[in-house]
Length: 168
Ligand SMILES: [Cu+2]
Image 1: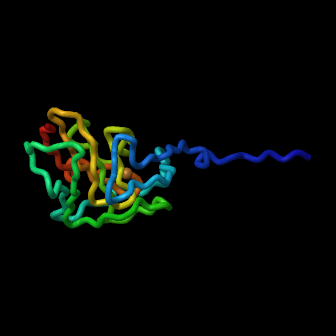
Image 2 (image 1 turned 90 degrees about the vertical axis):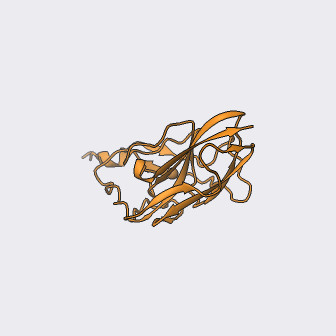
Image 3 (image 1 turned 30 degrees about the vertical axis):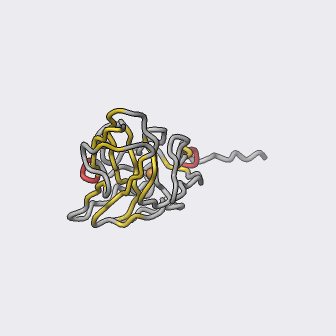
């Protein structure tokens, strides 16, 4: 007698490979992680976005809004009341932790709970980096530091900070 094996639907959840670091992003003193991680994009098993601790905020430590800069530009990422970690290999989500993302000319924040895109204008620092060097074309650019959780979900505007720089 023939048996039928049914594959549970939850095993078929779409998975997205995560590229950390891009060709546009030249890291000098910290290496952008090149490992890939599968992120769940759907499913009921995903824990809710952790709460944001009181007083938590992100900011660029070494560049001010409106500043004239040169390229390549080194950026130092600051965060208060949150701990920067590597992205969780097992997707384990903890309160008060996450990693930085840099949005280049890509808006002021990513809506809370949304998976942050991974492309040349949305750079993940899933290795737990707190600084990076980026190449920018001459002219004005907006740079947004966006904090996200272990599975790259945005903490939203509350943990984002945007500056405009003028690249000479
Ligand atoms: Cu990420």
